[in-house]
Length: 322
Image (cartoon, rainbow, N blue to C red; front, side, top):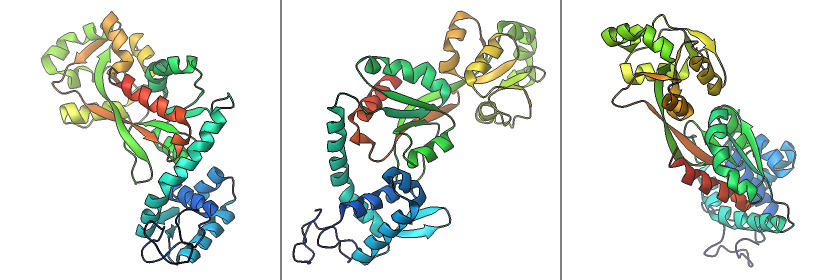
């Protein structure tokens, strides 16, 4: 039982919210359902996390609201918005429920088969940086399940309970997800040595915007996300070029540019080896290169698996040198 309401009266430390009170014997199942809806942002997303149907989740929340005498969520066309009373209740029960869940996670670990950690993020960063950083943990018995993709769908899947940690290219909104800055990636404008020689005179005379005007642009997507940011932040101009080649994996962009297909704006970490070896050449060196902060986002309750904390801490430590 959470809270000590043996005689039905509200006592200090009970789970009363906003003048209402929980029933004398708080039903842990109802509280777990409430916390899942609170953290996932919708009844529909909470259902698979709990192994329940959506109507069952709805019925349990309605029961808890009747017992507390207060509305906990504002029903929206897409999702459920917690009321201030729900924020109060979540603050009181999250710690105890997570502690109970962590006991279950440790007992599972004692069976000799660790629970996998589900890590998601951009394919390039996972392959070039995250997986090498986690290799020694895997050798010690860590089990990993990796998903690669774009930030918005990965965060949606995190809210739905499909991932434990997501490396995101932006900080998620709302209060339900815990995020912390992981590292800054800076962008560089690069081409092969051959292209650099061919446009060298124009580059020196007119600058990079004019020099690359007739050079094929190799990029990640049709909307030129990195190149547009580079032009906006460094040159203060709108990029009007169109992509000659789009590759939905920046490692492919690096390969194409090294082979002489054209130029691109890329994260420095992904092409540093090629810059060092001379396979790529910087076309421009701004005083302040454009930066993008990456965030490590954790699913609420994921610490029930102690290996999640190990992965999080290892990534934080390794990211200092990325």
